[in-house]
Length: 315
Image (cartoon, rainbow, N blue to C red; front, side, top):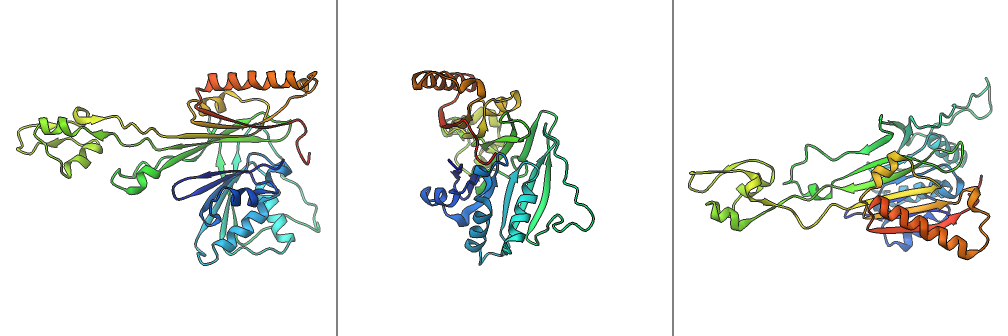
């Protein structure tokens, strides 16, 4: 079953993996292709990437009248070569820019192919595809996007800010596989109006300064009010989504990222020793046991377990 997961934000759409049915999945999700800004690839198996070239071409058409738009694609090393080779040999033209970010520094060291002198097909280049890299941190985590530290809480985009991180997963030998975690910005604390009035401060623009952590004078100038005196926790909490590609094991770095996730999407792959279960009942027990362990260890609110894959496609 080709893989594709769509995550709709307030003004953006993220796609995780792009199997052959990616555009059908996008249509069923009622998300607009024009709003797709980032695509994340977990690994380079065919059932996760063969729909990507067509998705890029459709996105280019959808943004035909916005030539300055840029689509960002993230994935393991080799993703850039796959896209440029496919699109160049198929004589495909893109009307918009595509930035391909390869996650470098993982456990798998992939050697660049060496083309002999005069080779018929050298490494391809596409004028609208830009190659970039993201280094892996010492903690085994790729920081794809951090929270905007200069964004003021007065900015309406503040509540739409998010961070994106990735880390490696265990799938099959010699195939680098990563999972992604998207987390919203923590919402602003709220002003306790009753406390402010008690301290001599009526609703005004000073409330915004208090929310930004700046102390202010009360209305008659007799007292300075510190933010911690009047700020209370916001009942709305930041949401966190973890998307794991085919995996039969979750390393420590990835497990730390997944903790306290509101939703974890686990696209599992059975290891060889679990293929000899005697019947469907034994398999069901194994699935439920794994579900309980993951939910308990990660403190999850919702857990989505996609169908188990015993033989990955296009190996």
